[in-house]
Each structure stands twice: as C-alpha cells, then as structure tokens.
Length: 393
Ligand SMILES: Cc1cc2nc3c(=O)[nH]c(=O)nc-3n(C[C@H](O)[C@H](O)[C@H](O)COP(=O)(O)O)c2cc1C
Image (cartoon, rainbow, N blue to C red; front, top):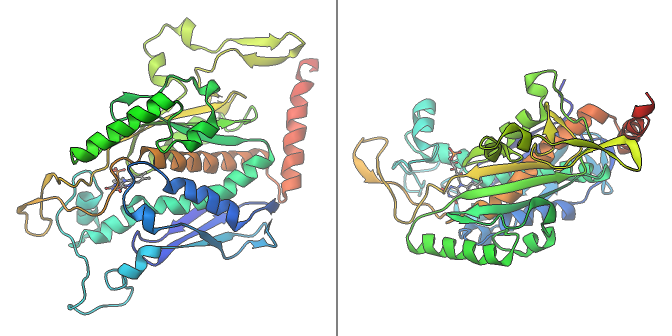
C-alpha cells in the first residue's frame, strides 16, 4: 500500500490542471497563500517566454483542508490556465466545427514528444501529444510539492536550489555549504554569485540573439534530513534511486548526479570516501568530515545535506526552427514554433526542488508514518533520540 502518492491531470492549454495528493497526515497548517508563493517561484526566470507573463499561477484547494489545517483526507487542487480564454475552440472538450481555429500542427519539433507520441498514440495532430508532454504540467507538481514541503518543514527539512551552469558558463565558484540562498532567490538566473549572475545573463542574451536555446546544470540540496531515510534492502527502496527517477521525470532533464558522483570517477578511492570521525565532546556521535557522497550511502540518507545535480538540455522549440518533416505528408518542412523559453534552467531549479520534496515526503512518511503531524513528529524525535543512546548499546 502506497503511503504517499499524487496524481496530476490537465493539458497545457486546456481549462486547467488538477492534482490530488494522498497520504498527508491531519493537523498540518496549510494555506493557499503558502502554495501560491511556491508556485510563483516556478514562474520567475531570465529567458522565460511570454506565457509566464500571462499566467499568475494559483492553486485552489478543493478538499482535504479545513480552516487552514489538513484533515488527513485527499487534498485536491485546481490550477486554472489563465491562457485558456484564447484556446476555447482549439482545446474544446466538445466537437467544434471546421470553421473554428483548432490550432492543428503537423510539423514535428525534433527533441519533443511529437514523433514517438504521434506514432504510438496514432495522432495526426501533434497538439494531441504536445499538450500533455509540455512542462506546463510541472505547475501541478509544484503545487503537490508545496504540501510535501510544508510537512518536511515540521521535522526540520528545508530544500534549496541554484543554477550551477548555464550554457557554457560555470557558476560553481561558491561551494554548496557556503551558498547564500537568499542571494540565489534574488537572482533571476538563480546564480550564487554576482559574477555568475552576469555571465549567465549574457549567455542567455546571446542565445536569444542567435535564435537558439541553452540548457545547464542545477543543484538541489536538502538540509536537515535525519539518518536512515530510504533503505539498502531493495532496489526500489533506495533513496538515491527514487531521487534519480523523480529528477529524470522533469521535462528535458537528461542526467542526474548524487553528490560529486561524476568528478569522483576521476579521483583515487582514498579521496572520494567521506571519512567518519567521532564528535570530540561526545564519542557516541559520528559525523563525516566531507560530503562527496551527497548525503546518501547504501541507498539511505547519512545525515549530511542531500546534494543532487541535474542536467537539463536546451529547449527544442526555437525561433529559427530546425529542418524537420510533416508527420502526415512525410514532406520536408521547418519544425513548428510555439511561444517558448530561451533558457529554462532557473525555472527548472524550482521543479527540481519540488521533486526532491515529493520524494523526501514519501520516505519520511514511510519511516515515521502516522495519521497526525504530532504523531509523526513524536516518532521522528524518538528515533533521533535513540541514536544518542546508540553507543551505550
Ligand atoms: C520548466 C520547464 C520549462 C520548459 N519550457 C519549454 C518551452 O518553453 N518550450 C519547449 O519547447 N520546451 C520546454 N521545456 C522542455 C520540454 O517540455 C521537453 O523538452 C519536452 O517535453 C520533451 O521531453 P524530453 O526533453 O524530456 O524528451 C521546458 C522544460 C521545463 C522543465
């Protein structure tokens, strides 16, 4: 039986997105304003397309919350697509006449779901694939994750993110443990220093002028996770495996790294393991002096910050479209252009935070499960206390 799960529904230009979150305990303070604040973070970003100016996302809570406190029942939310007003015919649920603009498109965008989706689902209008494949759906995930994040706050877990590269520009001058997360929040490109902020913006401006797009790598970090979330005993219970799947599910993500996983491959083993030492004031307390493992060993959190790096490819839609073909005629054609971002790295950061929050809520509920927030907090506090007595065995 799944402890925690969520489901989203909705098309990019349809009336809206629906999300149902199940498994959240009773007694959690939750407001629409809290969720709105998280959703507005997904909408900021230098290099974002016109749609972000139209949409001011807001999730209306339709069930599971009373007087700003969760009831333990499924939480249903509705996110209206403000742009739907311009799409009532094209996205109508009922049949429309041939005189209506159905916004059909047939010219495949290379790098999108268009080609495999059309053949698999037997679609001659590529819009029938794009509408759900679009990253608009991530708005619903961020809404679900806001609920997860609220729960994690109760046991002292916080999640942050920054862009570490944008295009060919590296912005890793500040080490993860030294990042000023408020400064990142203030940066339109989610850079952690002003030099990277400037270089990322120049790279985005240049790609816009060149009528192309750029991707990058972003880092998502969770602080305060207790030792022992996830498990070593089975492949699908490993925390790193769950995180990798969750990050990989974000549209356009093509790589996931836990800690300094890739750099570690070029170093000798003595330099990449995180040596454990006792606390001088209390030899029963252990801690690692480095965090190359990114806070996870053997599929379990080890008490260090959980650090995930995520590679996201450049956006496929370009103002100077690639050569392609028409799905119905097979003739050579230019790929379609729909209004689009130039660089989505900054926005993807907040989606990455959302996915980490959803995974951590799942493993927290698995470990400390209870029907009320108080019960979960008691279970968590008792477990952490038991570690203090560990050495007395
Ligand atoms: C936050 C975010 C915004 C995105 N915005 C766009 C966009 O404006 N235009 C576009 O063509 N792709 C955009 N993408 C990427 C596509 O959704 C994605 O490349 C496409 O669905 C194909 O899936 P795949 O790249 O994972 O194979 C965005 C992705 C994210 C995470």
